[in-house]
Length: 245
Image (tube, rainbow, N blue to C red; front, top):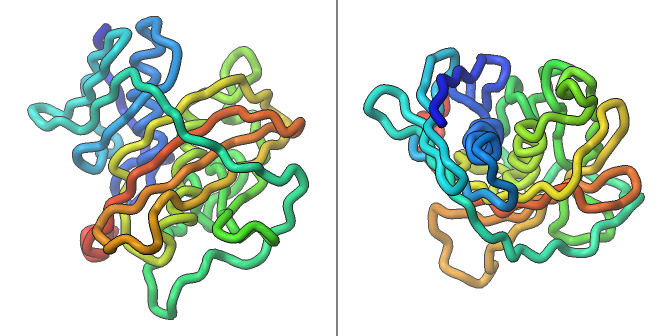
């Protein structure tokens, strides 16, 4: 299967490139459109451009997104043994994740977590610490109808998007970092118009020597407390100047 793909500017992460979770969801959709169902590992090789026609080639076990001769992202069928911790059904939230003064802060215009976005334009998922659960962050998610398909359920690309930024808040908040890889599995649909919850937690060993890589887990649960989706993310810290608009 081959098709043209344009990621519109609405779906940015950094000011001039796509949100990593959204772009990963585009890659995953290629496999699913070809007939695959199951976990997908999506890797981003360069920041995906906005408002540019790209080429997506996909089969039931792999996908490749290119911009001319440049490999933007790739995906493959995968397993996801990630263990999801016990998640509170009625959490209370504290402040934002800790970051030292002067640390990098997330983009105000990010499609997923930007504070300057509004419901229906962005997902508005600014995660906070979960009281009584050390290391866990979370955020309520109102399932706006703007992000639903014809069947009235949230388009899977937006579930992939929601699995992105809360992971950053859990493992790299205060650092300039980009999503390098997201492996996700969606177990059930989410009906638009209701509410869900997104959680994130770090998978890094706090005693290990620190590198540029940060690992996290994320999960979406519905209003009944059922697990909708889970993901394991790999973030790479970068020079903040590279993320300027």
